[in-house]
Length: 138
Image (cartoon, rainbow, N blue to C red; front, side):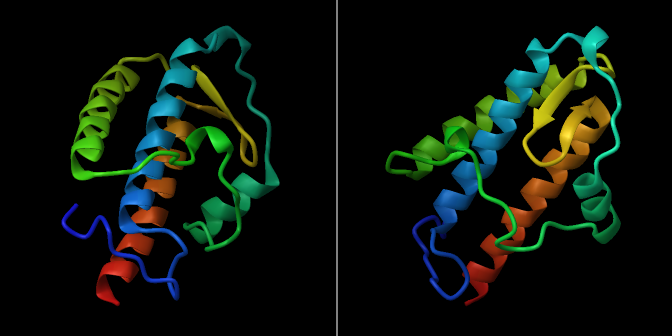
């Protein structure tokens, strides 16, 4: 958070705070969405994009575009981020208590059950943390 305002256009067109806020918005949105799903409706379906990303183990930069719902829109400050972090912690505790076939529909990876949603959230968060580390190093 101490680097929240740092911006390095050679690495990313957005600031450290933007990446933190976006990552927290994704966690929040996904946790809320999956909690509302009906586990009896989940059906596993192979997905080439998911398989490719699982094989390489990371999201290549510039590959995807975030849905508008998870794009930061207002000024982002430390207090704002600290509140979002606490909200996400609460949502993740609830997430852990969900049954295994709750699911989330990802626009690229398709239907993800709880285990695959956990995989996605870790992958996505690591992707943005790597960008943040690169901004901070610069």
